[in-house]
View 1 (cartoon, rainbow, N blue to C red):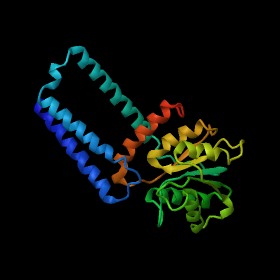
View 2 (spheres, rainbow, N blue to C red):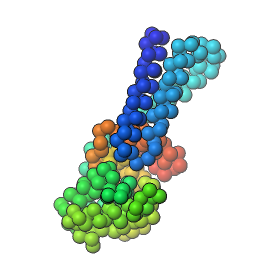
View 3 (cartoon, rainbow, N blue to C red):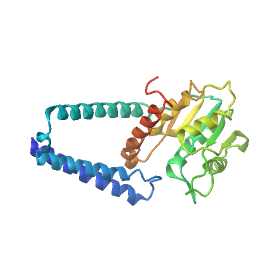
View 4 (tube, helix red, strand yellow):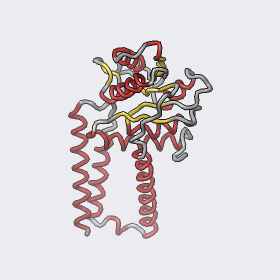
Length: 254
């Protein structure tokens, strides 16, 4: 049993390193969050070594009990949050919404990143099918972006055949919460049901944030995401949910 545990930890550490290297090799990562996989690999290798050397046996029983309790609670919380995120992967919104909010993502020199283009393609298809819906494109300009995300998103939608008169630009935001806070100011107070367009792994948190920003009937619309990046996105999203929950920006359930 001990040998199997040691091998399992070392094998997982190798998998984490290989996965992170793959993310880097694609050149498509918009952030450096992938570095967490190297930290995770180091932690797993350290755990394997500790088990191999019977390091935990030397700890006092109360200390071991506390460590196991905290670890178990953390794992349970992680599974709960990931389950909530997965439960919104298939959200498709509703027809005839008054407003859509398309959340920004990285804008590159040659146009939207793959993740952002998929959000915009989904929004464009919806706007074609629902000609009375107004679209708010939300996103400022980051230090590594040639133009604001909103400007690039608007241009992309216009090329897709969307009337510019139906597009409202919000160019001040730099994170999801700001997207929704600033978009709320551009949408009439009477509009409490909007569609929030983002990638599937991001729908749950985005809708929960929207509900606390004056859109209690917000519905999500999940765009596709590259399969290879799902583990990275899901892990990153866990930390995003924890941050916004602890800061009081959202509820986990409700």
